[in-house]
Structure formats: C-alpha cells, structure tokens
Length: 264
Image (cartoon, rainbow, N blue to C red; front, side, top):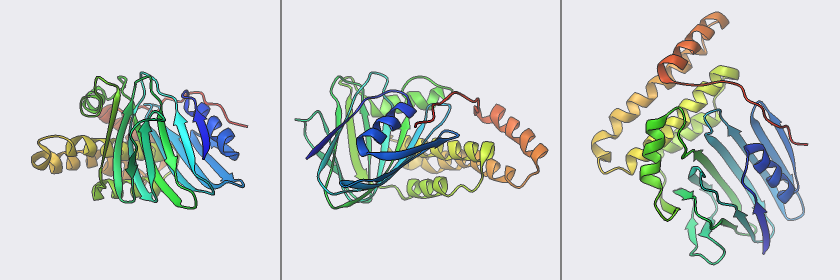
C-alpha cells in the first residue's frame, strides 16, 4: 500500500501538498484550482474552489494502480466536511488503527475531526473513484447562525464525528447546478456560494428532528437568492453591478478579494 500524508494549512498549501504527493500538474486562477494527475501509479484530477467565507468545494476523479492511504493532519478549527460519493468506494478511519467505515456510490457522509488523531482515507486499486467534498468552517464567519447549527449537529466533545447514509436527491441536483454554472466573475461566484449555502442548510435540516415539517419552507427560502442571482445574469453591466450590491446587503454576501499563491 502506498502511504501519503497531507499537512493542513491554507487551501493553496493543501493543493501544493496534493501536487507533490500525486506527482501532478497544478494550475490556480481566480481561486479555482485544477490538479491534473498522470503518473505510473495514478491518473485523474482534483479540482477545488475556496471562497472568501472559507467555504471549500473539491471534486476528486481518480484511479489508482495500487492501494493508497492518505493521512490528513487534524487541527482544532477544522471545518465540517460533507462528502458525496458518485463512483467507487472510499474508506475512512480516525488514525491508522481506527475502525474503518466505507462510503460507497450514491452515499453521503458528514465528517469532522478537531482531535489530535489524523483522518485517514483509503482508496482501492484499479477502481474509478469519484467524490465531492464540501467544507464548512466551524469558526464564526459572516453566517453565524448557520455555522452554529453546523457545529451543533456535526461536532462533539471527542472531536471525532462521522455519519454515513443515503444520498439526498435534492443535494445531488444542487451539486450538478454548481458544476454547470455558466456565469463567470462576480455573478458566478455569488451563485456558487448560494448553492453551497443551500446544500449545508439541507444537510442541517435533514439531520434535525423536525426535518419533515420544516424542510420544504427552508429549501424554498434558500432558493430565493439563487433565483435572484440567475436573474442578474441577463442584465447589462451597470444593472448587474447595482443588483450585486443589493444582494450583498440583503443576503450578507461578501466578495472581498484576498491574496493567494499560484503554485508552480
């Protein structure tokens, strides 16, 4: 088994670690990362986005020629990860000797780890593996209420939390919407952020006791900013800028630029 190790840090640092571990070619532009991998022991791609509210989105499309374990360093303020498996199997354990749990095709998982024990992912050889990962910060950000709900439902005193269940068709549709957003620039960023926020809201609702009675109203409410952003895409530049400012004030969006390193 090939054993890999990833240090935690900034998003570009993580991608640089992935580049070195997988012997890939990394490009980064406007906070969009694309790692193309073609080596004697693996091929595929890892793509990712990091937004200014520290929400992360990554998609893995890989095939290994041998079994691989990937140990990921834990840290106290680690985000909660929502994982959606589209093909193949991914196993997880807390520590190399921990109990393994398997995430299979058409299943989803919620994972948080703020303990001193690393998370370890295991990949099978000669199997096409595809999964999507959404990371929601557990430290307070601009959406304090949603962050607190995520912490309440998906973290515990031990620091280790994992749940595996069936995929949610509504979330699958949102992910497809995210991956096919045609708009670029500010409008595209706002639309993607709205979709990811909606996915996290659905996750919180389906893990709440009052899920059946409150799910539809919450989804309908969350779709309002998404529909407004889609409407912006038909406007001219001056109209779009004014509407974007309105959205920022109404829905507490932020699109302040920040520095990032372009990996070599």
